[in-house]
Image 1: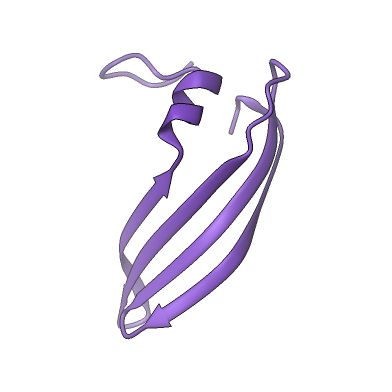
Image 2: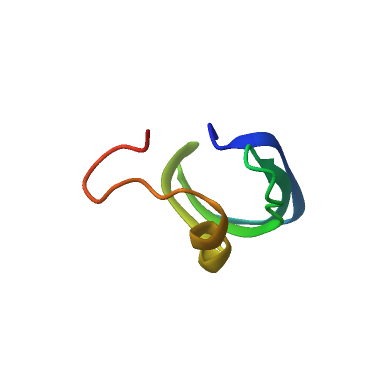
Length: 78
């Protein structure tokens, strides 16, 4: 989040089936460098006994690579 001047994410659709919750979301953001970041997400959550046990996130990875600074291999982003 340190790379964003602004960031707003909103759930567009939530689907629940048994122990799975699927959330389709969109984000409107602007990087500190002035690049727009219109991201689309799909989250798949698994819930057991009221606790999250698994989270999968799908997004536009080409947008991530094009707009954001990726951390060095094996290290933390600076």
